[in-house]
Every structure is written in C-alpha cells, then in structure tokens.
Image (cartoon, rainbow, N blue to C red; front, top):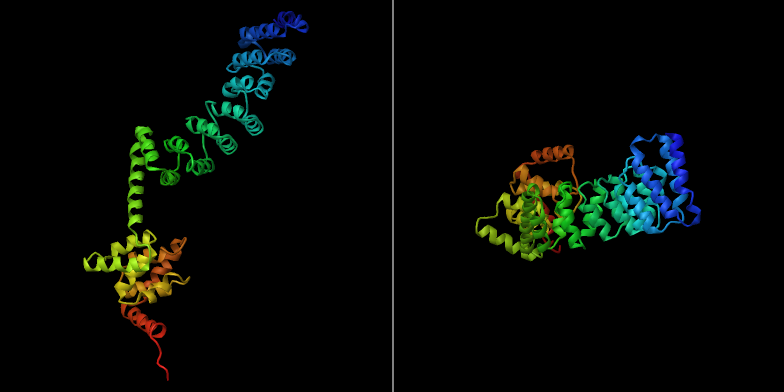
Amino acid sequence: MQTHLVQDLQDAISNASSGRRAAALRKVTDLLIDQGERLSDVQVTLFGDVLLGLVEECEPSVLAELGDRLASAPFAPLPVLLWLARHPDAEVAAPVLVRAAGLSDDELLDLAGSRGKDHQLAIAGRAELDAALTEVLIELGDRDVRYRVVSNDGAKISRTGFLRLVSVAARDPLLAEKTGVRADLPVRLLRDLLESAADAVRARIVSKAPASLRGEIQRHVDSIAQETQRRAERPRGMREAVEMVERLKDSRELTEDKLIEFARDRQYESVIAALAMLTSAPVALIQPLMRVHRNDGLIIACRAADLSWEAAREVILSRLSSVTEAEQDILRQQYADVSFATAKRALYIWEQQTLTPRRAG
C-alpha cells in the first residue's frame, strides 16, 4: 500500500507548480479522508508533509475548507492542524481552534495569548476548556470572548477566573446574567455578583437560572433586599442611633437579640447607644471602647450590661477583622472572670475619672 500511496500523492501534486495548488490540496485531502483510518503513523506524517508543501500559496477560502475537513478527523496530521490554527486569518484558523482535539492545552494557551479577538472567540467555543485557558481568555479577551466562555458549559472556570468575571460584571449587566446562572459559581461570589447587580438584572438571573439553582439564587436575592432595607433604615449618626435606641427601650424591644443584630450588621453607633442605655452610662464613655485595640474595656461594658457571653462575643467580634477559635476561648474566660458588680463599679470609676469636671482647688 505504501508504494501506491506515494504514487497517488505524487500524482495529486504533479501539477501544483502550475497554479493548481487548490485542486491538488483538495485531492490530497480526499485521499487522506478516504484512507485515514487505515494509515500508519508514518503514512500520516507523509500526508502532512505533502499538505504543508501545498498550503503556502492557497487562498484563505481554500485553507478554511481544509481546516473544516480536518478539524474533526482523528488522524489529521498535527503539524497541519497547528499551521492552520496559527494562521492570521481567523476564518482559516477557526474550524481547527473550535474542533480539533489534537491541539494541546499549552498550544491553545499560546494561541489565546498571542492572537486577537477572533481567534480567542474560536477557542472559547471549544467543547471543553481547562481552567488555565479560561483564565487567559477572561483576562485578555473582550466582552464577547467573556460571554462565550461563561456561556460554555464545558468551560472550567477557576476562582480567579470567577473573581475577574464578577468584577467586570458589576459594569456589564449581560455578563452578570450569564455568570449568575452558572452552577459552579462559588456561593460567596454569587452573593457579591447579586449585591452589585440592579434589581432588574437580579430578576433576569432568577428567571434564566436552571430549576436546580433558582431557589438558592432567589434566597440570596431576598436576603439582599432585606439587608438593603435594613441599611436604608439605619441611623446616619450617633444622635439618630441614640433616638432609635430610646424608642426601642420605650417599646420594650431593646433586647439582646436586637443588640446582636446591630453587632452583626456592623452598626457601630447603634451598638454604642444600646450599650450606653443598658449600662446607664453616658455614650461618651462607651464610644471610645469600640475604637481602642484592647478588648478589656468592651468586656467591662458588656458585663455591666449583664449580657450573655453569646451577645458579648458578637459585640466584641464586630470590631475585629478575624479571631481564631483559640482567641475566642481566651476572651470567653476573660469575660467569665469579671463579675457584674465589678464591671458596674469599674464603669462608675471611669466615668468619674474621665467625664466628671474637677473642682478648682
């Protein structure tokens, strides 16, 4: 068969030098497609050498046809696929970039980083994309490339890739919609995306989400709406916080649960006003305790308010960026070591020392 094959190839290219390269290219491709499943590796290499000798002077439309025919062929010569994939004309490269299984991840990464938008679009349309490749496409591609990546169910997207998508989606409602319905979007990033989206965008994300995700997304949307409402109702300053806490006291709604809510929402003015009310201490005495680095003063104030450890912990943690379990255990022991009477006496002494004017003597 080797002798006949060589003769057929020689016949196919015999007139190539006289301006009939396109016809010769098609004939060689016909032979390759017809014989492909029965060819040895050596024979496939021979076909590749012949094809590479013909492609140089062919029109882009002919090369695009070649790429379309070889892209899905498992026996297509890799050097030919790479030559087509690297072609500057995206119409030539696209069929191979989209469908050729022979291209390695490293080769695709190189192409994604060195070619333009149309090549990136083609790569983004592949049936499978690994996370390293999608990171490059998301970072270097324009919005159309990102749309295609995020709409591709076969694309693996890393946390880094999702972070970039969520960041850009804050200014791109359509990208927010496409990103928000992906099942692999981490929950924390889904929350961030929904928080930065307009109400209309959130509604479209819910409506377009798969049934398996719709309930979870709706819960986040509802939670964000409630949080937005709470923020709108928050006091805008210390005076308003004090007035609100006084109303809560009058209506008997100034409870530990309400204080915990203030602390978890980082409503510092409300926490200060509530602690002042619960300890019968001036706001000016409690306010500095929320600002200093040490926890001793806040422990005293919480104990003087007769708070449970659970409520005191939320107040203390509300002003700290992060606390380990071991550190929390130490704080809990410190809190247990202070009695209510000691805390009340300490607050009284602090008030006398810091707030009561001294008589001229």
